[in-house]
Length: 289
Image (cartoon, rainbow, N blue to C red; front, top):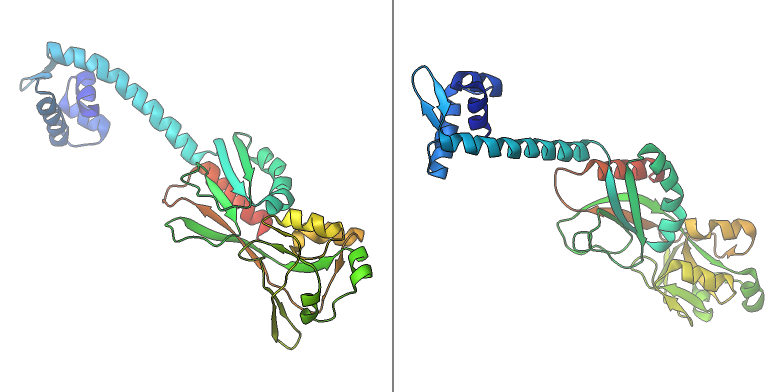
């Protein structure tokens, strides 16, 4: 259609070929295939002159409009692919999203004013394609999928309790002492029971803990622990402020606890949108360190 329109505009296969940077033979082939597909003759050809048939004149009138619209669409697609713009839907775990990603969003908005971020905080696994997300940050075990995954950050955990709980029930001296304590368990592949501890000698202690509260939310587990309900194994970024304020106290600090891995998950494909590319690079630059 483009080849035909250019011939109609220039009145010449040679000029059309020059304008489209193709050979006259290829231009002629494209026009011939278009005529065969339509089952009509669009051009009158002589050795010295090319003119539109009646049908060709009507067809050109309409296809020129279509080609103009197509060019506009291609420009829009190109701009969205190369310039961050549009709505970016992101999912993230509740605690990590609130503590680590949300504080960064004003800075991202300043850097990319044409991108609107819609962030859904949830601790469940999110299927980015089925649920219409551009990307998900997750700490859950990933199912076998063709999605692209990239480690965003590894963060530590802290065993802690409110000072009033320790005053009432005593402070554990070894990981094995936890079996006699009320342990608040987060139902998660990386935070759930049993709890694992590594001593200075490199020995690993795997403790099957139990308690009167289980939750799928680390934030809810921390809230219960801050009220003096029991011991909690928490992400360090979530409990750091409470530790500084004295609302929570470290327990068994001489033992190393597991680290948590947060990953970015997004659909496969070579052509990431500019808005997603920008957000991924932004998170890596601000969180990976």
